[in-house]
Image 1 (cartoon, helix red, strand yellow):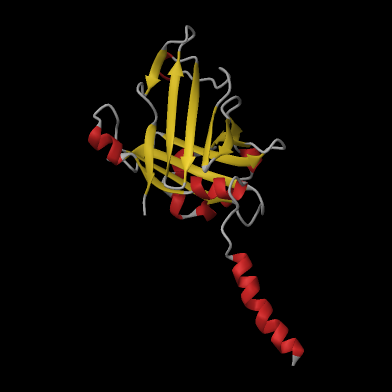
Image 2: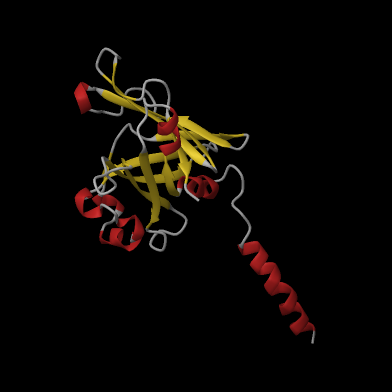
Length: 206
């Protein structure tokens, strides 16, 4: 009888434990806030200097690498979702000092991956070593008062887009959305691409 009572008490407790939300300032929380479908349509509607852009981030390799956090990222104009202008894989990691790093990779066949956010198993054909690391382009993040903020470091993220020599990214992540400011600079430090007034505000779709 005691065994039956124990199991009746233990099972609900186990279910409650498994359903607990990620701890604030944790890798699990950061990854969950980065996961989803986001849009800058509201920002574009109030400010013509910004475009309506779709941002989708989807977990991949969850069963293959338990405890690791890999995201397939697809960014496209809202009017051309089938023609993304940026496709990346992010590896989000916790660092020993309590901060976080989002390393950036490119795919061996980005054209084939278009629209595969709905089919994460598609990426099982590759291993992490099949991806190309964008050296110097990692974003380093810290957590404070319910917000993750960070940026790339220095001028090590090479870019040749529109005459640029390097790129930088500054990111703010909250549960309701992400603000991302990507900029390209020439060898003189003059900005040659990217938003000029501030980052793109991507609101999470319900």
